[in-house]
Image 1 (cartoon, rainbow, N blue to C red):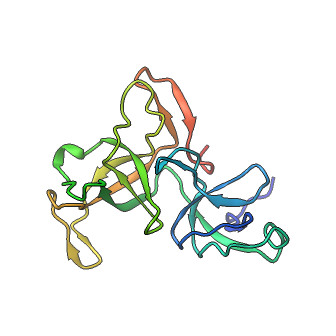
Image 2 (image 1 turned 90 degrees about the vertical axis):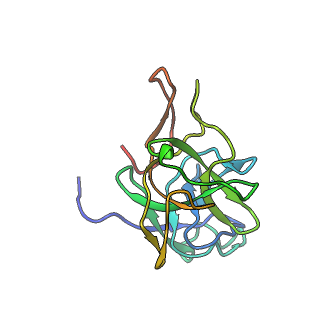
Length: 178
């Protein structure tokens, strides 16, 4: 068995368009595509964050040695700054959000993923739970972030598995996690 640094270069799937920083997954053909979402809720596995835009490659170019791009794999120990999102635009962060399990919500108009305050994910199956809120950043991009801000920011860790309230694992979430 060989050791060493991880290989961050992956091959892009056909006809993919995404922004740098988008969540992507490794599909059955060994290529990388934007994460899947049903009703704008992330509902599949996550490999990591794309470091470049999706280039909308033709079938001939996708998956070829000339189509590599970098992905930053996400592990359960990584901490991310993300913003709370609700479609009504009035979601307020609260101290009681700490340690909540949340889903991720995709806004197609912006191409960005947010912590989902629209849909409840905790319950009997927790199948759409993807992150746990572990704190609140003091500043984001030089601007003070206060608990109670509308569409404020939270610190999250990704879950390796979604787990039902009875403790049974439901779905593997992070493809790089063991």
